[in-house]
Structure formats: structure tokens, C-alpha cells
Length: 169
Image 1 (cartoon, rainbow, N blue to C red):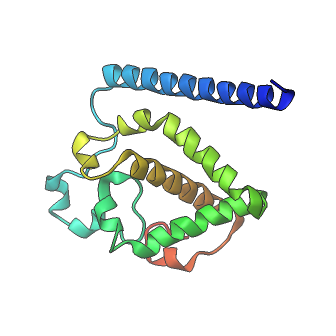
Image 2: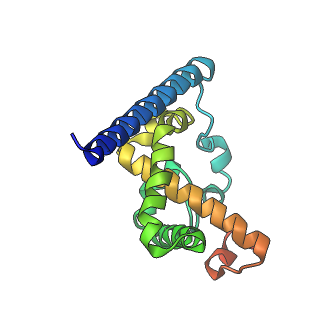
């Protein structure tokens, strides 16, 4: 066995063990959260409040999280495009094109390791039809959107699409 093979094996085993540790930690954290916080933290607005003005509680451009994900396909398409634009903007500011995949992969890896924790914040019915892969992608896009939006607000960058929503400046 030459040095390159040994290095490859060491790298692979280290990566594999790291993944197992992250998954075990996330599973343990999820177990602790479920046992100590059995009620979901993010929930829908109750019907008795929505009855006065249904549109006030329905996203107009951007939905964060799974609660309105069904709407996101069609009605919130411009907001979803804006999320991808913001992801690109966030990554491109500090990384050359060649490393974007690695950066996104890192974000996905971090979010995937804590998906159980995030999942525990919502009621089970909020995930009807949402796979783990879709949930992880949603968390990455939503998180990057929020960060980039905050960067834009603090630096005075104007986003015309947001003017017609409560997110606007």
C-alpha cells in the first residue's frame, strides 16, 4: 500500500466517522428536544385569528419554513427565485465560482446534521408531502435568504420586489 492509498483511506475513514458523530449528536439532540419540548414551536395562526383577515397571515412573496410550502410552487415562485438569487449573492461575495459547490455542500451538511432539531419545531402535519431532502433544501435557502436580506438592509441595498411586502425597507 503506497502513501496515496493510505492517505485516501485515512481521509475517508475520518470523514465517515465525523458524519456518524454528527448524526449521533443530531439524533441525541432531537431526542432531548422531543422529551423536553413536546409541543411544536412554530405553528399556524389559529383560525379564530385568521377569520378577521385571512390575507394578513398568508405570505405575499416569500414563505419561510414548511407551513406555506405548498403555496411556494406556484404563487410564491418570484420569492423562491429571489431566495436562489440571494443564495448566489451570499456565496459569491466571499468565494470564487469554483468553490460554490463546496460552500453549498458545507451548508447542506450543517443543516442536514441538525434537521431533526428543526423538524421538532413543527407539527407533524406541517410536513405532509415534504421529504427530508426538500426540507433540508428549504432550510438552506430560507436561512441564506434571511442572512442576505439582513446584509442588504444593513448596507442599504434596495430590493424592489420586497417593497410591496412587510419585508420591505
